[in-house]
Amino acid sequence: MLATRAESNPTAERRATWIAKRIRGWLGGGMGELGVPATAGEYQAQHAEQRARLPAWLVSFTVHLVIILVLAAMPLARLTQGPLTMILGFSDTTGVAPFELSTVDSAIDAQPQQADFDSLDPLSDAGQLLEIDLPELVELKPVDVLGSDSQLASRAIPFGILNGLKGRSGVLKEALLSKFGGTQDTEDAVALGLKWLAKQQRSNGSWSLVGPYGQGGANENATAATAMALNAFLGAGSTHMEGEYRDKVKLGLTYLVRKQGTDGYFPDKREPSRQQMYAQAIASIAVTEAYGMSGDEEMKIAAQRAMKFAAWSQSNRHGWRYNPREDADLSVTGWFVMALVTGKMAGLEVDESKLQNVSEFLDRVSSEDKSRYGYDGYDSPSLSMTAEGLLCRIYLGWPSSHPALLQAIQDDLLPNTPRLDDDSYSVYYWYYATQVLHHVGHPAWDKWNRDMRRVIPAMQEKSGPEAGSWSSNRDAFGAAGGRMYTTCLNLYCLEVYYRHLSIYDIH
Image (cartoon, rainbow, N blue to C red; front, top):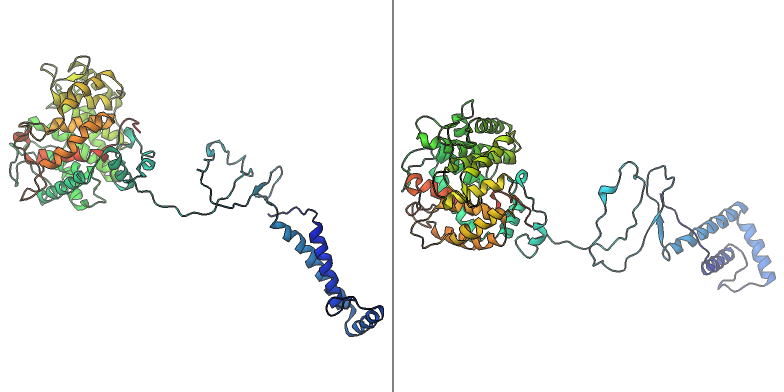
């Protein structure tokens, strides 16, 4: 509904009176040809002549029509001189106050104020009005999340376990790369590594730890090899439903799900017994990530079975080892903690008590005020186990300011960043330390990442039949895991920018 307030305007009224007199002259009202008043005799003669020519009803109709038009013109003239009052609302406008739209002479440079939408009741405030000024329309440019406007995108970056799997594609992936220091070299290395992995898939959908590539592992474990390869593809954003390697991922997941028993267990008896629980945890991560990223209800069945097996198989030491429900070591336990945490990321039913029980086991294998960790509580702390133990602590609730976490980062992790001149290194350690420092953030992450993003791509083979992979010759566990193992863990390190969102709000 639109309403106007007419105000006194003497100038407009004199103009209207003058117009009316001229019209009356045109109709026989006493104005000469050029608007000069006629004599009394001329007026009477003209008036008699007009009355003879024109019917009285036509004269009356015309005069009244002109007067109506003149009166209408008066407020319309004032519309351009004062504010326009608009009343917006529903048909029942009782108690509704008007607001005014003021004209704007130029574009508004100041940032617009955010309306407090949370305070509005959509039922009781339905007819209420907000006073606003309308700026001129301006063309908005798209935000370049990798350029100078990346800070705008970073303010919207989520964090926490429930958001863990959301950063692997699209604009958010680009923003995460920018925020956490990924480079074109790291992304090129990931692309080349995935290309090598895709070439190694066998016709039944599986991958192998022993070949057909060079530097294979000591023992075959198709469950572990397939799960590790799938996690590399999933980490870069490909699922069985979308992505560059969709067909490869679908074939690999089909292989894993067909191997899984109704109890949720993936490995078979042909695979080394000391590797089966490793393979179980890594396969659990693969199917759970696939469900969490795709929402595929069929994949949910396999993932939920894996979660139930993980909870059931925990030992009375509150960890996991080579056989279900028997003993515990930090190496196997770390993979199962990650499997259960991935279940939480995917929204599955997870036995939270089993996760929190792990803290008791971590206490047993820790030393120096819980800043260093060993394999099973009977040996000395090591870099690999310290990094794995710290990651478990982060996922189990330690704050980023925990003194033991900060001490370990300062004393152990940062003095041992990846180096090209290492005669013997451990990509297993790099994998866990990279995640710990990524979660904790700046400035410790900056120092680690400067070396990690330079060294790992430089160590990748760039030509020949193994282009895209990483040699296992100098790796501490390379003889056992082989080229497939070292390639997958190096890829996980380079995908860290977006593979899992940070646990902490480190914006």
